[in-house]
Amino acid sequence: MSGDGKGQSPGDGEISPEDREAIRKRSEELGQKLSALKAQRAKVELPAAQQRGQSDFGAAFKFAAELVVGVVVGGGLGWALDKQFGTAPWLMIVLVILGFAAGLLNVVRAAQEAQAKNEALQKAAPSVKDDDD
Image (tube, rainbow, N blue to C red; front, side, top):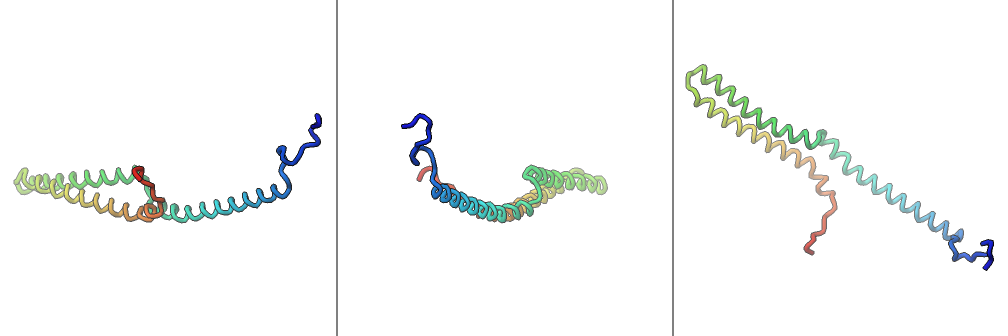
């Protein structure tokens, strides 16, 4: 053993040129595989995000607004018709119920549409192993 550290054997922390080249090739291969995987995921995730065009909060607000607007329009129209024909409160009650049904139908349709748009992402997602297995 020399005290100046010049006589070290290859096993003492130095990497041979062949090993360096092998490590460099493996890291390049891993980089290429990673780039390909990122590109593949971007193809799946980007179109679905572009189709959606709105945030989840915006979609929830839209659902609530459609339901409320149906009830308000039905109630307003019923009130106006009750005033016109003197049938208070029967037309308002009937049209509020119809407005609620129409608003609910709009919410169900919008939810089905959103689910159909996100179906590609759901199918592309990796399966999760069950904890009980």
